[in-house]
Length: 242
Image 1: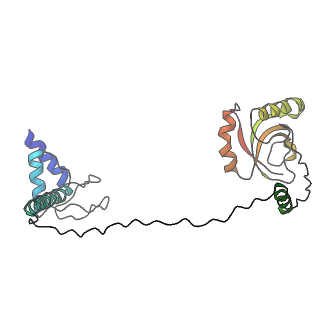
Image 2: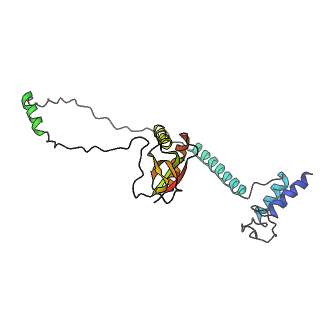
Image 3: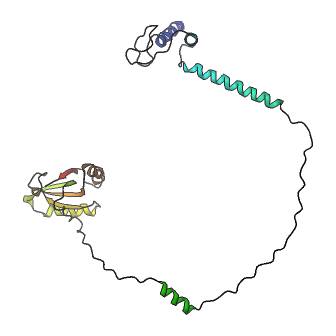
């Protein structure tokens, strides 16, 4: 039984392509199915391959012989190095050591230091005041920021946003405005309400609660997961164009 299994393994290795399993001819160099260069069937390596398979019933690949050869060379090299290292020895002898010159202690006289000069406090303060550059008075123009949930879509701006909810205009603005305020309180950016009838990309007749003003669909899609995590599971991205 073992001999039969070994012959089957030999047939699988030498009569089929190792990549796709297609059948091969003895003199065939490349697989007609996948184009792989097939292992040779004549020479010392194939003979070693057959002996391995008939003895063990399996075969790791032709690379094993290169690895074994490298291992033998490495072991031989290590053995030669150990043998040569054991024979080498330095002859006994006297090593001449140069005498160390005596250390002569020298005394270095300290250099005279100039007396410290003290600047009166009043003079130092005057100097500091004079050196300070004059600062011109600047006027800061206060910037107006929309209240939370009251972001207005920029005029003549086309882009992308995330739609949180849509309410029919027949129901009024109370519900969409309350939803916008709640979304802004949850931390969503640029939350507001727009009338879908003002935009060609939207179906008219709804108040749309949106979050974010983005230049591309990719930017809006990247922020969608955080919006859904905030509690708006039905949110989706939408283009806003007039």
